[in-house]
Image (cartoon, rainbow, N blue to C red; front, side, top):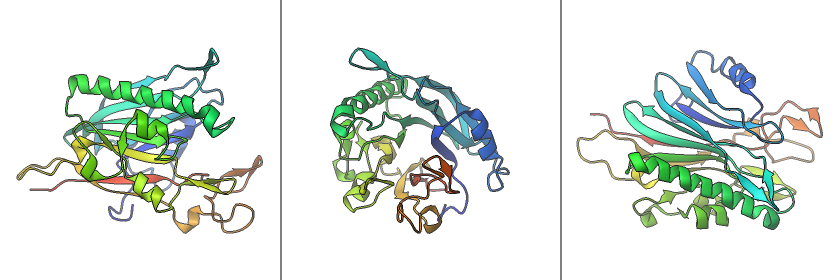
Length: 269
């Protein structure tokens, strides 16, 4: 990353076909010497895609992980969507909890499918409640492709995210990507509409001012990794993220979404 001059300590992955592609990824030229490990569960998604978690083992030590299926039904039929992956572990010597998501798509229209993402958001609420039963002031990061923008009801009404740090109270979730969305930034384009579906939410415990003499992590900043080499330079999708496939043909790109990231920092005595 730009400021750390290294690859991320932890990575949430969406649209992973299987464990093999993740193993191929961490063996690529730029990652093979980083000591990445994989946490992955095969999910019941109809298209066979999963979420996953990658971590550099000398920075992060997992102690618990579990896949939760949101158990969503529509018209009395089960919706086979992605699991939500909880990973708890020690970043350096500090316990944090990460939930990786890929919520149901907008297929069939935004309004018709909105309730599916609201139900997925409610599963996140239940995971957070489970974490806080044993870790009341838990440091939690919720990340993924939500298939909703920061202002949609799944985030604002179900997860009750806040756009401004000054309005975040104990137990709230802060969404730094809502401000970026209001500024016109995005992570994908579809039919000439821009969206910011890819977000990272931060629990209030990661915003607290550092007590003098303490060395705990806190949120520093969030951003979208939208470098020029990740952007289509010509043709129908000019200006959109440079995708790998178009109409079933491999075109050599990376993804139809830009990655997003946050920095956590702490003072060192």
